[in-house]
Length: 249
Image (cartoon, rainbow, N blue to C red; front, top):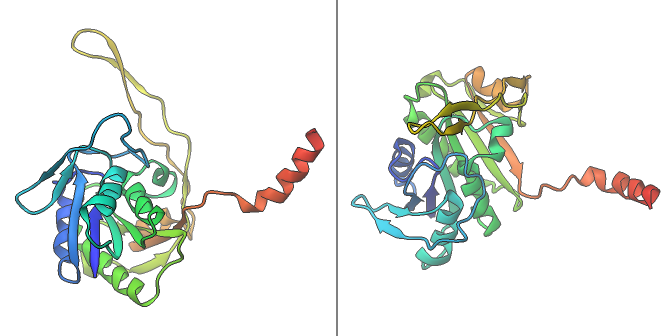
């Protein structure tokens, strides 16, 4: 089994090292990550600059691009034979609810799925981020399960693991995405020369963290696995929207 590993925290991040070390026990791995922190990059591609590679002493490949660039480049150019799966992570922090839309970690997995490969994104949810080994443990567990029962061709798995010792995790739950209230305002300040600058403000509080959501599972000590569909079409709206369109002609 061949697994491509990527992330959005950068090729030297603790999470990608922990993930690679664990997956090397069950598969042949290639680790290709961005040369810097690209958190929040979502599905962006680099279109106006060339991509540069650098092979590191530990065998990882650093790319001067986004997480999506890394996966696309690795599958299209670096592999002689395609990998069997793409695994993105371990992200430093949760990717739950609305945050999945911005996540470079989720986007790297999604790019793998766009290119026809099974893919998962895995994140460590917490503030101290002390237990990457726990997230790596559950990554291996899920991958072994997927070898027995693959997921649908238009889906990826978004996994969030509570920052707990392995023995303290209560189990695994299949969840839906929760939701947040709208984000708070920007932080307005000045740079050293006195010019006005803005920083992204804090995310909104949880709006839907009810039972069944990823938020609820992680807060209660469970690993959350949320199947995400790549096709964003709201199929249930097509018929009603067609009626609406006919009425406005």
